[in-house]
Amino acid sequence: MGNLRPITIGEIDYANAWPLFKGFERHAGDLDYEMIARVPAELNRMLSAGELDVSAISSFSYGQFCKDYVLLPGLSVGSVGRVHSILLFMKEPLAKKKPERVAVTTTSATSVNLLKIIMAMRFECEPEYVPAAPNLQDMLKDADAALLIGDPAITASWNCAGLHVMDLGEVWHEWTGLGMTYAVVAARRSAAAEQGEALRAVYQGLHDSKEELLRHPEPLITRACGLLGGEAEYWRTYFRSLQYDFSGKLQEGLALYFRYAKELQLLYHHVELTFYEEQSPQKVKE
Ligand SMILES: C=C(O[C@@H]1C=C(C(=O)O)C=C[C@H]1O)C(=O)O
Image (tube, rainbow, N blue to C red):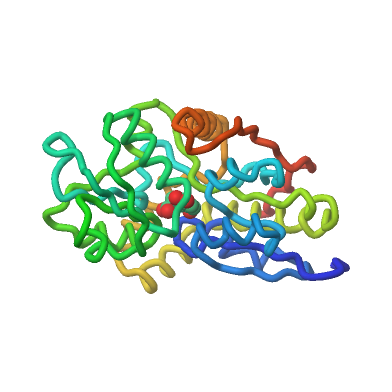
């Protein structure tokens, strides 16, 4: 494709986003692109700084910079209920002792703020939050609880005897009756204006990757067992329980999250979900 420079795409470096990205190359045709894999907080920074044209980012970061971005429809990472990989590890159960000091991973934006919302509005608890590198043992040296996301949350959940674990997706669902969207795919408005044809190809490629890998997830399961460990059945359930289509119920949950974030002054403006307007991607051929 004759784009003037390669379009730059940010890929979340966690298993939860693999369905969107791991089949992309096969569906990219002759698109000239560069794919950059990082943890969400780094992608959030890079997209906002204009170092990427389009990226999977924390949905909270979309809220912060929504004036500069458009959302790619039908692409997200969310859950209706348990998410399995956004976990608060507590030394004491919440009913016994409310945490006073909580270490929170520096890799996240959505989940750190989701935790603040849940703690303040659901459990009337306002601990001190301390940003920390995602290492459970180190985090708990000096804190009552620790928030992890992504692969480090999953591997920690296999080895956390004696700790009490809260799944934030599950608590959010029990509390609000809604799903939650943790990551979205956003393009800079400037990229939509200047790299229209390339962005359209990225959109189609991510969509086709998702359709193919959710229908045939075995390559993802093999990859996860090899790179991260665990049983095939664990990963089968994991990829099945995550929601990638940004459907109405997931958008509704995200809208409520943004409203609560504004009420708690974690965000300072109302957030509109503005979508990239192009014809819908073609269905993947069987
Ligand atoms: C489902 C997850 O959602 C992730 C959580 C994010 C955040 O908290 O900012 C960002 C991207 C998502 O991929 C996970 O971490 O496992």
